[in-house]
Length: 435
Image (cartoon, rainbow, N blue to C red; front, top):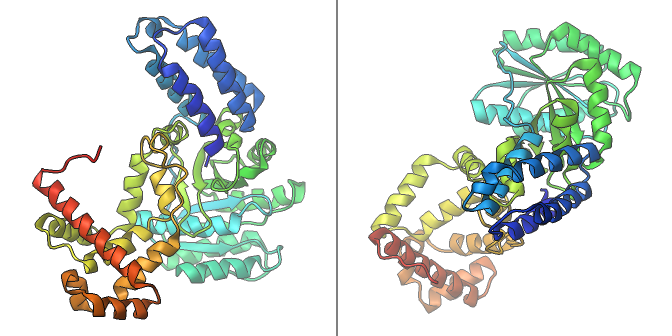
């Protein structure tokens, strides 16, 4: 996400880092580049103007003039202002109700129904509590079936009453949730191709009757600046508590995310980062500013790992690495854990300095990981625990078993041996960087 904008801003900031002194002339050149980068990313013109004026004013201030490293201080100013533009602080969900009621609204095609499934999945995993999905989109063909299918995939119950009155369905669903011990009720409302009085009246009626803790607008980030008008239209009628931006993993310029809070005062609460049902992330302005400027996002990476990696297995693997007893069985388990984190190239981008190291354009073929898995699964338990016993005849058998070549089996065994040697060096304190 934000690749194009991030590249432009990072290139501009890289130049000024080397400046020993910041003057009106070199700052003007720099602000011109930043202004163009933001406008090309489809950020609202008024927002760009205010942002660049503020940065320029602070960059020419006394603090920067007296700084030993003015270029680095300028980068900090840009990051701080970008964080403010994105909302300043993250806005957590209000889940204080019993059950907590979350009403999702949006236009047709915004990804609302898929997003409600992602959000239910997120809440269940994050808080270990029980969500109920409610089908109140009674107009769009197959909307109820789509939600039921999502519920089936996730193992989350869907409450539906067919094509009845959405207001009554939502009220009955809350009674049902209280009786059956649900912690969250997520209402999937109807959408339209555009905002109209009939849609708004229905949403207002549901809102008035169920009094949700959250009214979240799901909006397609690829809409560009039209999204601002949609947010304002919904906000005037419903008083939104937050926005969920979908499709930020696509070929989007990111201008909406940088304009929403400043122009509407509605916080972004979540972003859709993949089509998978776990592809929803909390929106944190400071972390996002860091990602855009190539500073990485280690906190999000650690949070993601904590959610999917089994702590006991990880500790066991660490102990085996330390003792030199890490085998191919352990390696296979760790691979399976890593796969849960999603595409590796996305994780690499969250590392600080990934762009400088040339890692942002890395494409890791999932087939390669599948090949490694197939080779290990074609081994006997004894071979996985003692790779040294794998000689010529065993390699031929393993290659036939997984449908790959003996050369690929050799390559895996050699790489695993090198990895074990490196682990041994690291745990003994004798490891030296290879450069």
